[in-house]
Image: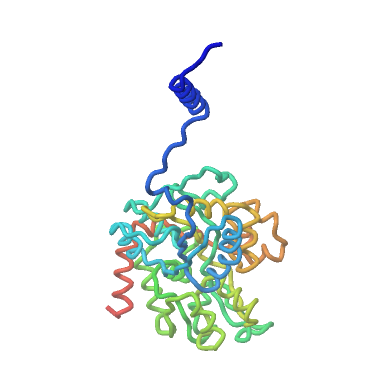
Length: 362
């Protein structure tokens, strides 16, 4: 019988062990950034109010239950300079941001402050084409529209049906409210002045400000947050206002305030996900994007706010009554115009400066 020394046995065992590791693969050591394992939390930024509450119910809470990743919510008002400064300083505290205006995305891409979207696990063909870019994923459509209190315009009386009517203070008297922002407000001024919606862009800025000069005496409030118009209309402080459509739906459905919107001339735009460059929890941010890129999840959002899905298949899950109050339904989409993010990205700085001077009466 062949006798092996202890040394030979040890060498043999080592050789067998190395062979097994070679066959199954040696695990790679994690980098310091990955050593702690998957993200346990995700900082998500949105606009507050009814919309963020709807996101919480339809998106955030189900995602937390499914993944165990805790979402920490923050709010902003679309302050692009704040986002840009955060990235450029290297102190990125946000992981995923809701961008309501497409010009934010275009400027972010041009300035190199956004992460490219990893579309693995997302069916790009299922989306409406304008909803996706290399750096953003649209989660829903919203519209900035005209709204009024039904009590001010009872059944059987004339109701404003266009921005020309909004500008017609003789036929529809009373104070107005418009957003203290040229984005969409200039478009409404041009529509009121007779410019067809298909010919809005490039915007005739001079003509828009001349139109605004005419309505200015009747604008008693220039609103700055989405919660203001429903309150102004409900209290009777103003008779007509521009507004984000979801705010009116919330007031009418939840608060039982008799407010209504007019879809004609609505500015259709997207709420999109963007990831700041250098986000600490990029993988978790992508996981939430993938979660909200499922038809059943987008359809769920319409239970809490009437913002329209960006996935075509999501509409198949919705009853006709729900589709009728969505800004991106075929009927309402045909009465609206698509906000031109490219034009605004190129002209925003100059127009904002002029807007500020105009508000100061200069």
